[in-house]
Image 1 (tube, rainbow, N blue to C red):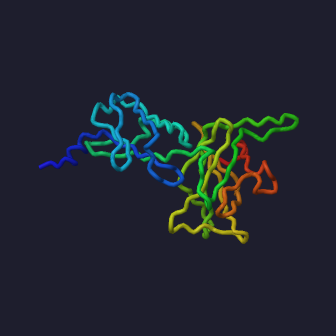
Image 2: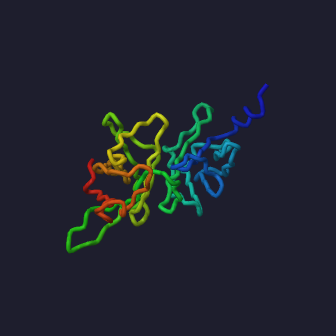
Image 3: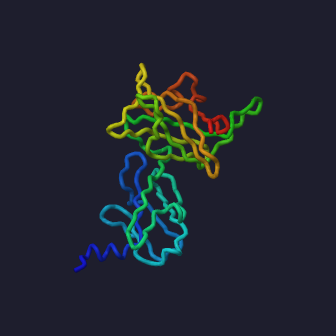
Length: 230
């Protein structure tokens, strides 16, 4: 005998779980999700996931996630980005929604507020050309001298501004300097370009660093794409 839960699952086409990239909390209220090419609209199940009921999956082109007034970036997932069901087995796609720079980060969070530009301006031309819509993340140095990828991706806005934070798992052991600082590198990916990485950046533990944190002031957290390492 087939239970009602089993019958319902057989009707589900696929599921999308949208998470806050910082706190990893589910997001559904205030978030609009549209699957282009499908007739149906998603429903939110009791686990907070967006689910679509069974229809022709071949018509699916992309999924758009619009956070509305919430402090997250709007993103689109193409067909190949989705973890779609195979042989009638339900699979879910997990999306960590990048936060905007006006996101209210919790106190005690380690990270940085920075800016990504194309290249360092050469006098007398002092114009900075921002790099918009690039994804950024952090890597951190552990006690054995290895660099580790921090979970969560973030995105530059139209002005090239971004905020990126560190989140550690219980077993993580970052190397802590004499002044309590952590060593990180900024990892950047933009469009079809290869990923690039910054030199080491020293972050005060438990603070969201901004240019005022450093003696070099404003230039301390401005990253130029053509200076980053491939």
